[in-house]
Image 1 (cartoon, one colour):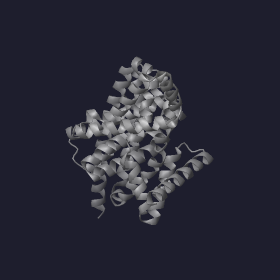
Image 2: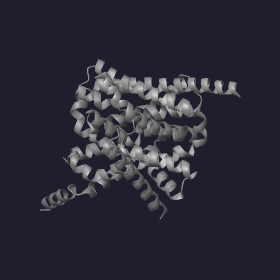
Image 3: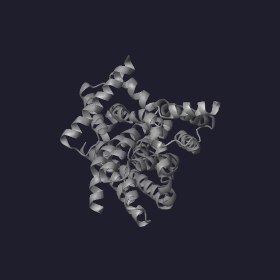
Image 4: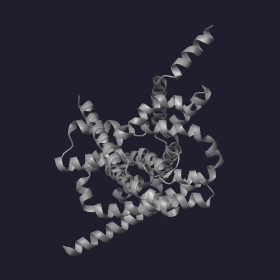
Length: 122
Length: 240
């Protein structure tokens, strides 16, 4: 029953997110809006209900399985990928490497900077 | 006689969602078993192996992606509630998050911007077609959100899904080594970089290192999806 209640809650939040983004014409996808709503609810309630925790870990525990049908979509793009494999491959590798190094460096620098400032204030 | 019976049965089955959903789960089950046997060697990533198995199977049986997706959509659909479910690990890190939310937000907003600009610029420089450039722009964002962004900016959502998955695999294979190489020791920083670049797949491999890295990777994936859905369409507009 826990799992069923949990998944119902998740679907209700997703639905609320979809309805909100459609009505207000927000550029944010519905599920992300639903995630934001759920996060705010948890903040207000100060704890995760067991049912939501159960459903959440069941879904996230097999997260990569959920990407399989999307990945199989490659079958419809084999021509494009065969024609453009070099720019696609290089772009993915280079920009991922740059983004990863840049984010890690920014995070290290801002954490050091902000903790130094708060240490000074104390 | 037997042959035509088998053909009739296959025609019936291939039109039913039962086949698509079953072969998805069977392929993933096989791939996951292989992965565990091979000591979790990332080259045998269960996602890559199951996608490859399914593509070979669909080609061999001459089944279209649409027919497969009749069943596959039930698995795909779960990405929606799974995205909502990300609020839970995010909330569980709330005490850490309160202390470093400002530097996390700054890093993720800048990270999403750099990632998007680099993807479009590099693809353009290397001569990728306009539609490929648009499909590649949200490549570091978690699949359901990336597909929605791609649709909005005029890319091909199904191509984006594939590129997102490939990016995630690349990030989870290379990421930890790369971060060690540039001297990052803090697990929370590693997690943030992994989640921003390699979304759910980066989070899955971060979770294998430590709970802290996994939680921060999940946080980065969720927050960067939020930032990306606002920033990517805007950057695409700016870059024309």
